[in-house]
Structures are given as C-alpha cells and as structure tokens.
Image 1 (tube, one colour):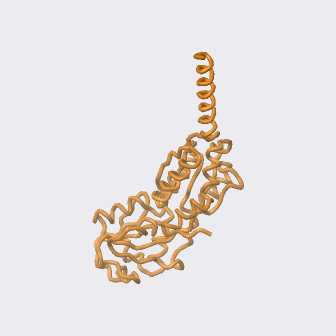
Image 2 (cartoon, rainbow, N blue to C red):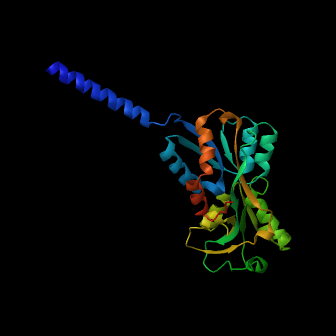
Image 3 (cartoon, one colour):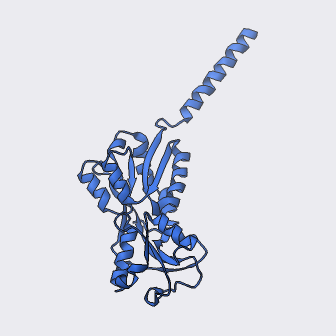
Length: 254
C-alpha cells in the first residue's frame, strides 16, 4: 500500500514539474535595448508589461540618440535601438548594423517649452521674445533630436541669435530637463512626454510647423538578429498594449 502511494505521489510531483516547465516562456532571456532619453518613462512601463507577458527581461540603457549611434558603430552589443529620430536608424540599416525590414516609427514626438516656475511660460511662447531670464536649457543638438528641434524653433522665431548666449546644453533631453527642474535654468525645451503627466510649472506646446517632425524610429540591430527575445520585444512595441502606453505620454502613434 505504501509503495503504491509513493508511486502515485511521485507521478503527481513529476506531472506538476512538467506543468511548471511548460509555463515558462520558451525563449526567456535578456534583451539589450538602447533607448532615447525622452522615452524613459514609457519604456519602463512597456518593459514591465513585456516581461510579464513573455518572461523575457529588458536591460535598458537611456541616453542621447547620437551617442548610442556612435556606440553601436563601435560594436556596442545592443540588440534593439529606440532612437528619437529616423536618421540614425536609417543609417544603421544602410551600414548593415541594423536588420533590414525591421525599422519602423514607434512614436511621433512633440517639443515643449517648460519652466518649473508657474506662470513664467505663457501659452504662446512670448516669454522667448521678452527674454527676461538668464538661462534656457536645451539638449545638445548634435546628439539629441529634441535639441535640434529646439534650435530650429528658435531660428524659425528669429530669436536664436538673441537667445544663444543664454543657452545651456544638456548631453541629453533628460539632462536638459534636470537643469530646468532644479532651477539651474529658468526654462527650456523638453519632450512633451517628460512633462505630460506633470502637474507643476508652466508650458508652451511648440507648433509642429516650427521644427522638423520628430519621427522616433526603432530597429532590430544585428546582435539581436537571431535572438527570439529581441524579435519579440520589437513585435511587442507594435502591440495595442504598448501603443496604449506610448499614447498615454502624449506621443502620437499612426
């Protein structure tokens, strides 16, 4: 009798073990992703949802798109690149550092002028003409598309030369935001996504006609070409679940 119970107990444990193995995603692994700094918060939410759904873990690095482009050219082992522009993913594809046919726009970004001080920035951006401030923060236009958009906006308004001595540059849009948030700069240009859920300060949403469209593209990089987890991450970015998160930060998705 004891022998029969032991046999059945072992059989039950073996069946339970088999079920637990089946429940683990077949391709669970790490995905190395380089992400433009403006997309930091939505990327974290997307990663959490992706990990919950697939069991794959997303290793995220945040910074300026230009910096990541240089690192990828130099052999950095990123598997996926979420740029803040279309230019760099297009170049990587042409240079055979990105997998052809995987490049797509995951979000359309919007530029905003923001101050942590209530009432400083008016709804039409007239504060730029008044110039009653000491410092205006932007991201480095050579490395960050939002910084380039800021320069284009100031030039479109005919104010760049007058404002140039007051400009302080952050290495990324995240650092530019930090300058403004800390008060080191009274105001500055940021990604709308950075302040979309923020209920403080004052802002002006820059008209889209004032700067080149910010088409943020993603691409699967050659180190991830044969990694099922990296491919799954790219696919998940297009899913309704991910799109909902992206839109919740003020981005447009078409």
